[in-house]
Image (cartoon, rainbow, N blue to C red):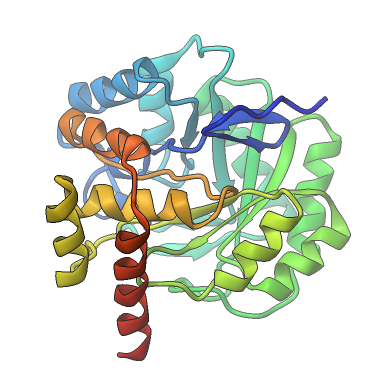
Length: 293
């Protein structure tokens, strides 16, 4: 049964979640590998997020690996009933932190069980199949075999909802022929807008789109136009970038990550930032200038 959406929420799977959530990737060590520099601080950030109404946390057992999920369990279990934890599978780490594809049915099944064990759950609410045809971005190729394997794990009752990550529009269409797709998670932000058409298409069908690197990733967004708007509104550039995403389309769910409580509070405040029409026009010019460049 679908949840009832209220203002500021959107349905993910069959649960209405606040549109500004939290991404746990930065809770691991440098390069998303190894333990956090300060485990107590990582626990504090997670608890602060939930205390401030965050009900959507994005994670993966290949963050660390294993460590981020273990920190989430330490900080939040037993989990609040309204908390939706979304994880992803399809990759593994080598001994130096490199990212490797892990698409076989056995690898996908192992990843689901690893996530369940480290999070301390009996079923995963949403699992994204993270495509690794190209580590650096989407690349065409059939997703039928790995997605069918994940759909089988769903039929076994280990996974409630299935999503896709790092995919092309063609792969989304192929995926929707195989099983119900609960969400799409791709690289998108103010200046990286390759998925504009895909976002609009998903919005028409009520499917959430979850941008990763909403603030630019390991190289934060920098733009004089963005800074000018932020100064005019009395906000930070990153708050404006998040507010722009929330305004961009109602199906966008945000998962900015941080290992700092202060930065977390700053991110969450972006949900209340109003962007007037002239600010949106200025920000669209920032995006247009980036695309032209």
